[in-house]
Amino acid sequence: PAPPKDPSTLDTWILARLSELTSQVSDGFNRYLLDTALRPIPQFVDDLSTWYLRRSRDRFKGDDMEDLRRVSQTLRYVLLETAKIIAPVMPFYAETLYESVRWSSDVESVHLCAWPRLGEVDKDVIDRMDVTRKIVEVAHAIRAKEGLKVRQPLAELLYRVEVKRKDLTTEFQQIIAEEVNVKKVVMVNEM
Figure 1 (spheres, rainbow, N blue to C red):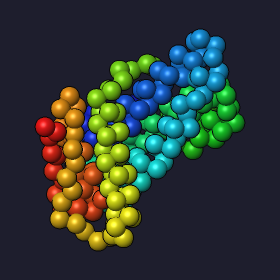
Figure 2 (figure 1 turned 90 degrees about the vertical axis):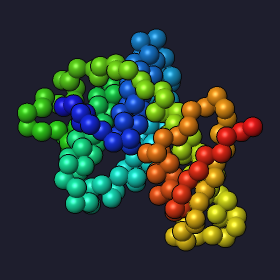
Figure 3 (figure 1 turned 90 degrees about the horizontal axis):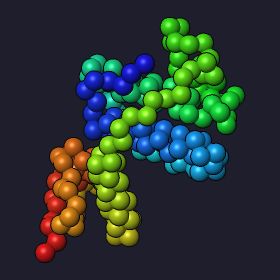
Figure 4 (figure 1 turned 60 degrees about the vertical axis):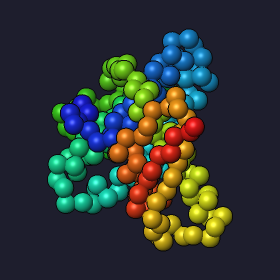
């Protein structure tokens, strides 16, 4: 299995997180540090379930068949690779996960698969999504403090960014707008 050739921003992010996880777990195992190898797994699972899957719900339900193909292919790839990564320490769960997403043309057991290849970790997309998630978190906290429900749309959200940090692209701003329910997201440079 392979990730889609034209992934969305969200797909690109989860694939970058998967590469980062593979690198961290491989490094821990190679140094015989089991606790170091296992530490990043819960955070990855949390990112996959509470951010990627929740943000992708509409893509799974939508009418855009090409986007459905991309998100399905990405999720299947991520789950297969995750099963391989956790197989040495959670063999039964890894096998269950693998069996639930494998095709008949795939190897019959996760324990017969090769270790995932170490890919390039796209730190830029990971950093931008971290900033995006922090902005969303702060915006939700401000809404809660002011008593403004998320279903109540707001005109705009202003966020300030350090001069050294790169601006969030339109795709990341769109994620913020959808999460916070604002019509416009505007970056304000620090002076």
